[in-house]
Image (tube, rainbow, N blue to C red; front, side, top):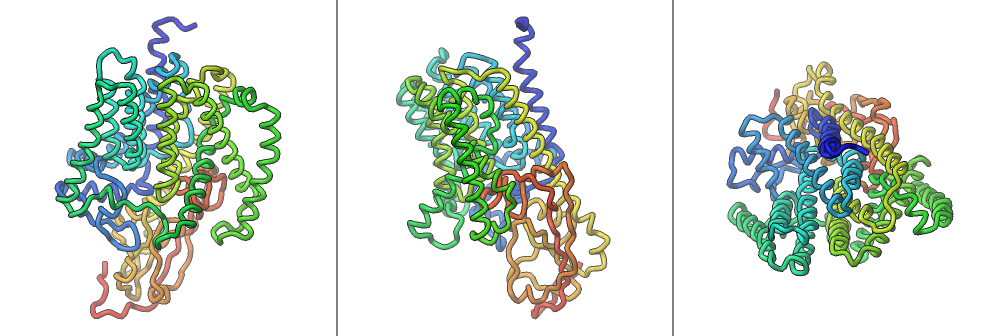
Length: 557
C-alpha cells in the first residue's frame, strides 16, 4: 500500500499525465473541420463585438450570416478576447487543452464522490482521457468546452445533497450549466434535470434555476437587438432540406439512435473492465452465443446494404461491416450494463441523477441533432462511467481494468495521431502544389473545413456557385473528401480535369477519422473510425477552358 504522502499526490500526477497526453495531440494541430468558421466569427467579434450574428461566413453553398449556424457565441467571444491579447491559434488550442483538463478533473471528482474510492475516479478519468473520443475532439469547437462545463455541473449537483456549505454546490452546478447553454444548445436538455434535482434534493437552492434561465433570456434579448430574431428558436434540426413527412422523421430518428449506439460502442473500450460483471449478470454463455449469432448477422446485413443500398455504401469491405457489427454490439452491452446499474442503485438519488443526465443528453442528439458524431456521444461518458462504477455489487477487477485502459490508450493514440496528421495534410497542400499552380492566372478552390483556412491563407479564392466568374487560365483545386458546394452545370462544363493529386497514407493514419464516407465527424455512412490505408484524399486540379460570360472579366492575381 502506498504511504499517505504518495496517495496524496497520486491523483494530481495521474491527471497531469492524462492532460499532457491530450495536450500533445492538440497543440500544434492544423486547423481542422469546423475550426475555420469559428475563427471567422471570433475575428468578426474583434471588429464588431456588439453584432456577432452579422458575421458573414462561407460554410455552405454560399456565404451566409452567422445566425444561420447552430451555435451560441460564448466560446467565440473567449476566442476573440484571446486573439485581442495577441494569442495565436496555438494559444486557442491551449485553452481547449485546459478545458480537457477541467473535464478530466471533474470526471475524477464525480466518480470519486459517487463511489467513495479515489481509484474509481482515476479509472474513470483515464478511460475518458485515453480513449478514442476526447483527444481527437479537441479542435477549436464547442464540444470539449461543453463536456467540461456539463461535467462540472453534474459533479457539483451530485455532491450537493451532502455538501455542508449550504447551497454553494447547487449554485456552482447551475452556473456551470448556464455557461454550457451559451457554449452549445445541447446543454438545454439538462435544464429539466437541474429543475427536478433542485426541487427534490436542494429546496433551499431552488433559486439557482434562475441562473441559466436568466442567461438564456439575456442571450435571446441580445439576439433580438443584434439581428432581429431569437437564435435559439431558429436552429436547424433535420439534415434534409425539404420538409420530411412523419414516416421520414421516424425513420431518421431510428437511424440516428442506431448510429448513436454504434458510436458509443466504438468509443467505449472501457467495457472490457466490466466483462466479469456482464458475464455474472447476463450469463457468460448467453453473451457468447448472442455475440456468435449477432455479429455474423450484423456483418451480413452490412454487406447486403453495401450491395443494394445507397451508392455511397457500395463496395464496403467485409472488415468494415464486421467492425460496424462489433461496435454496435459493444454499445448495446454498455447500455445494458448502465441500465442494470441504474436499476440496482435506483434508490440512491445520485444514481437517478446520472441516469437522467445521460438519457437526456442522448435523446437530444438522437431526436434533435442534425447528425450523430463522436463528439456528440462523448458527452455521455462521465455520467455513464459514474453509473457503472457506482454499481453496488461488482467493482471492476484490476486485470480487466488494466486491459480496458491499455486498449483505450492504443485506440486513443491511433485515432488521435491519425486525425492530427490528416489535418496536417491539408495544411501542407498549398505548399505541395505551389510549383504546379504558379503559372495559373488565378487559383480557385472549392471546399470547407480546415482546407478552406489554408487555401485562403495561400491567397486562393473561393469558388461560390452562381457567383464566381471563371476565366480561361484559372485553375480550380477540389479535394474530394472535404465538405463543399457543387459546381453549377454551366461551370462544370467549363472545367477540364488536369489530374488528381493523391495524398497517400502511412501506417500512422491507419485508424482514420475521415474517409470518403466521413466517419468520426459525421457517422452517417462511415464508421466512427475506420481501419484503412487508402489515400487520405484525392485532390483534383481543374483547368478552366471556357470563361464565364460576364460583363466584367474575373479579377486576376
